[in-house]
Length: 199
Length: 299
Image (cartoon, rainbow over all chains, first blue to last red):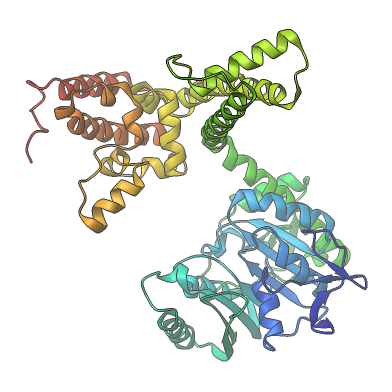
């Protein structure tokens, strides 16, 4: 990952969401992007050129644009039409973003378009986040990584975040994934955890 | 045979698909992929199939298809009309808030300008005062910021009236049964509160009854304050004109019929005269204190 001092940046065409530029690099704000927060906490999977990424919950394409700066191709799945309009604009300006309007919990909707990927990144506000991730692991290469941004408050608002976190880890382990590392995203994001697994 | 976005592979032989990006996107949308024993696509098969020469060409073609498919998908989702209606009715309600707020402010300002002026005994609500300021200043011309603002508010009020008509007409098209029972404007507000026609059609009558009375409902649940009898549907004359003692009952019966109407609107999308006639009769009966007992008076 490219850093200038303490600031995480990526190399690419700026102006996607009026992000700050630093020496010609795009500043990647950890308070807006959970993935940036993960890297600034000293964890995460290094993004390298040639990497293929399946991104679930692409939203407006803010984080997608940074991931696309580092990698070869990003398959960006988003369900809601309004943010998809923004994502399309990002895709029109970046050759390696593949926007897919589909439900991430139904991989058969986009199975035809997506190839085997090195990294599965998920950031969806759904109660069954672990199940969605597991269903999409079918696209993940052996030895590839899953980065799950766990929104504990979306899983169950009544449960303690730590409890949701433990339950999710159990589901992922019992499905045969190896947990590489996991962390809470405080102080950047409250009640959000990142879980990194290897297939 | 294996079906890929770029063609059908049968044994070792590949038949490429031809067409523009939109045609490819339709093919992807219509095909059913089985997820048992699923193996992700290998891009080199597209080269072997002859649809592209190298990786760059593959990605560029795939991106065109993805963009075409997503654009098509967005159009389809917006086509039902309730998405735009939602924005229209929310704009309308926000315009009301804004014009009221500004009118009160301008009225206060006007009083400072005219120390001998008072609204007492004149029965002039702020918006009427603003309108007369705007008209007078238009005749005379000029007059500084106060008059300009008053004119802007008057213009906004005109736009609001036009928008209200449009909302009403659109609601009658998108939700004919619900609009027939409760009027286009209130029907649209119910839609906005529920978040869409699909969401509204999945609410039970009891929820529709108190839609828009969130504070009262949660006060009831938390502190056992009296339950709200009606939310947005109070705006309909049938509810607010009903005698106090049957108002709750009218609201309940109306909401129950609205729940059915919303479902017909969502699943059939056209007016059902037989249902409407029966529902209107039932709601009217609930509004008459003596005969309204049947079916609804039991605790």
